[in-house]
Length: 79
View 1: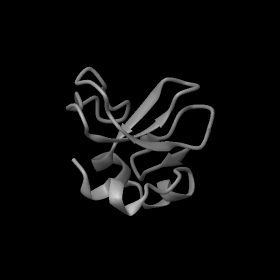
View 2: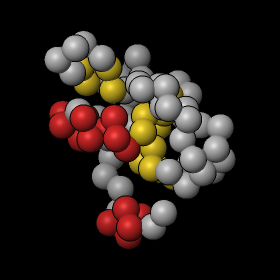
View 3: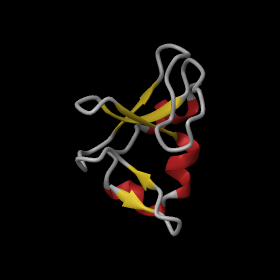
View 4: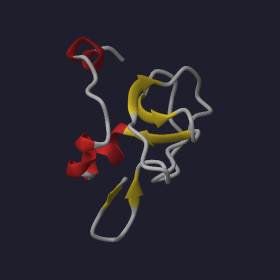
């Protein structure tokens, strides 16, 4: 769970570790910015809490890396 200067949160409310993945359909939504994510977009997710954060919001929270597992480099270049 990471807070920004405006007190927005990147992470599920329970503070679970986030898993990087690719969306499998276009109905996923970022729980931070509320943007609808396209299919195959990068997301950081907590499946236990049904929480998803987009890659752009993840990049806005430098401390989020401590709450998210690293995505293999080959996954970053695939889209």
